[in-house]
Length: 143
Image 1 (tube, rainbow, N blue to C red):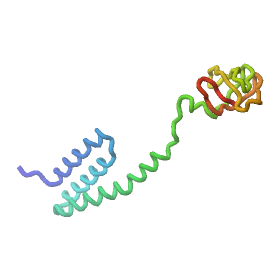
Image 2: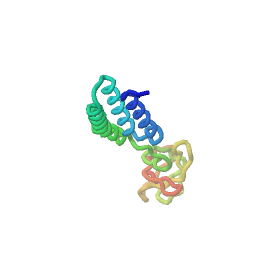
Image 3: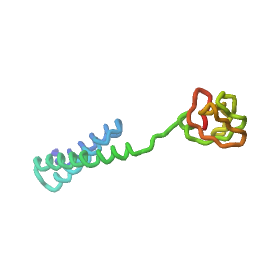
């Protein structure tokens, strides 16, 4: 029993799809698409040289074109800030007088925080809105 060349190309495409799923490396998917193009070339009756050339051209073209586009989209995503870094730049409401000595309290993101003024000569009264510029331990530095 002789298996046609296009079936071998499809088996190769499936074989390249397995590491794509296991490693999430898109290059394997691009090589699998090249193998499918090689299967199409074989199904049309072209020889092995044409099949390999089509496989190589399609695979290299996909890697050369799609990979840089994907990398650019991956790097364009805004970074996700978490923890205390996510609190910097937010506004808060003064609950107890805040000055440079650090004895005051603010309500920040639904929680009560101890706070001190960035400028030691500055003070904020209850009800005022302040901007959080830094978090120093468990103390919000505001202005």
